[in-house]
Image (cartoon, rainbow, N blue to C red; front, top):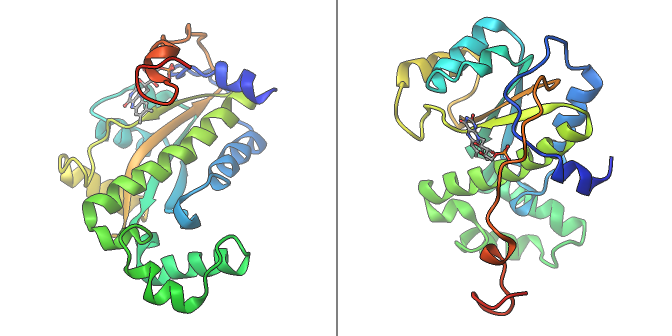
Length: 223
Ligand SMILES: Cc1cc2nc3c(=O)[nH]c(=O)nc-3n(C[C@H](O)[C@H](O)[C@H](O)COP(=O)(O)O)c2cc1C
């Protein structure tokens, strides 16, 4: 399938056929997430594939009762790995970029300048920015995964309405699920992706007009 066709074929799919997702298609979707770009290539994500009905039910409850989650053949728990931003790991990522020649910097510049500069080092900006940057990276990863899902003939829905550390609600259930999925302290469960063979063909949802969201040179001037 052409990439453009896959992008324009995107619809959130919330009803699935009662057939399994092939291992090959599932791996293609996960690998699309793995290949996504991220800030200094820190890759602050982990994807947990969930097939057990009981766990899906708990996740649906965590998602304020969104029942379609229980009917999806596969649910992917998308976790943000906040430890990926810590300076030693950030340094590793920067060193790899330097060694690959992507950035013309050496270890001394990384240590003395970059890792102490809030523009280059997300950890320098505190927890709110770390979290927002984590969401930013995850969005790119599941964006890639959604396109690959369409390419594989699968349907996917992003579920962001989730009680978590971020909302501070349903704390007990959230912690119970975190323990069950063996998610460490420095990882947050932030988003779910439901995946399966589509059992519906919804019309494409409308989008804002092109000129409402694109400008040339300055806002208000049409391209
Ligand atoms: C970050 C994010 C969170 C979302 N959370 C939910 C959700 O909790 N439940 C749901 O049914 N759809 C959710 N959606 C799907 C949106 O409602 C959907 O993408 C939007 O209405 C546009 O429709 P389309 O995806 O079919 O084009 C979410 C989408 C995104 C990108």
